[in-house]
Amino acid sequence: MRLVNQRRQTISMRQSIFEPIANFYSQGAYISVSDGNGTGYAATSDTSRSGLKKAIQRAQNWANDNSRFQLISPTTLPRPKLSGQYHSPIAQPWDSIDLETKLEEMRKIDQRLNIHDVIVDWWVVFYSCQSEIIFVTPDIELQQSFSYLTPYLGAVANNGRETQKRTFGIETGSQSGYESILNADLGYRAKIIAEQSLALLEAPNCPGGNKDLLLMPSQMILQIHESIGHPLELDRILGDERNYAGTSFVTLDMFGKYKYGSNLLNISFNPNQPQQIASYQYDDEGSPAKREFLIKDGILLRPLGGITSQSRAGLSGVATSRSCDWNRPPIDRMANINLEPGETSFNDMVASIENGILMDTNRSWSIDDSRNKFQFGCELGRIIKDGELRGIIKNPNYRGISSDFWRNLKSVGDPASFAVLSVPTCGKGEPNQAIRVGHASPACVFADTDIFGGGE
Image (tube, rainbow, N blue to C red; front, side):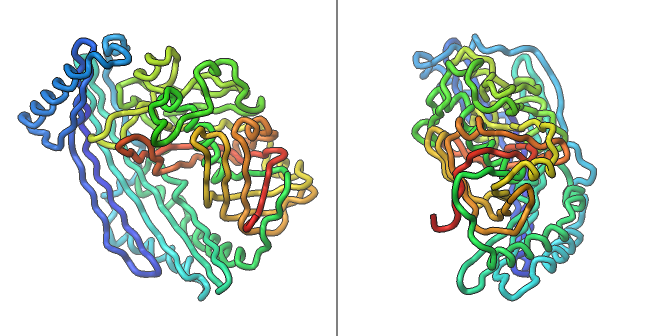
């Protein structure tokens, strides 16, 4: 049984007007019953003794009905005896700060966004979520509690000819308390994005051509997410997601030998990165989570798959079987999927580029069903010429094929450019599950990238 209690709150201000506060509360239990070769599931919001009994009986009936259709016997899944706890690191719990203090902080940020008449829309949002999970089997007893906090700022400028937008914060979500709002210096960030939205209106379009591409961490996380994270999900490789979220260009025989990227590419599954949004001690099948390399020195080593998919595929994976709430089954999901830092400083990366483009903050994404061919756009770009950063450009875009792109990775930033970030609403599964995913990365340089501007 997995018992989940979840509370969410959204506080928002748009165009200097506070919007209604949104509160969400959910509690329920997810029941899994294995009987012989069958496994059945049921979920209920009735957590009384009688409600749980009814859910157990429904799960038992499903286990009996589908026993002849099982791909694997549940008796083959490893279920070691264990118990443990995990708690998000929190200095100032969200509920310990009064509402007026939060609203006053938002007012200060709002004033930094509304700096010009051509800024036609602006907003400040704080998302908070607290979740407690108890997981029990005959041999396992686990207790985990999570606290998530994500700010989101935006400014939209329009001069009558075109519109430009700059945002900040949605990628900075973390496991933390209210202290992350104070530590982020959101007033300073608000001023920067407001000024940049104005500058983009007058900036030239991104020039096209094959060039070096310097991606900042805010865009690297999307690149990792779409062209490494999703292709390595083992249930997708096995075909489970084919008719909804797609399949993968990765096949089972690639693990252990496929050259996914250059020798500089080192991707880890790290459930223990402090304060990263998808850190945890155990996944939702009760498997202990530990740091593992998915890709090492460019070679593909292991998939993102929990114990059920591992047993089906005959491969070692990682503890990434996750669900979004009590009324959804755990499936193979990304968690903290990070690109390990290298040894090159940001200044040295810029100095190494004769003709290139820097891109920052994702604006658009498109990728095919096998997570191979992609096209991404960013909010802001800068010209790099003869080893120097030059003016701002608007509508920067790039495209490529996953394997070719990662093999063109020619420089990985050192720890000084390493940022621990997140994707707060990754969707997958039928019925759909939106889940928090962490990505951390330094700035990186890719050679010979197909870059294009607006209208191309």
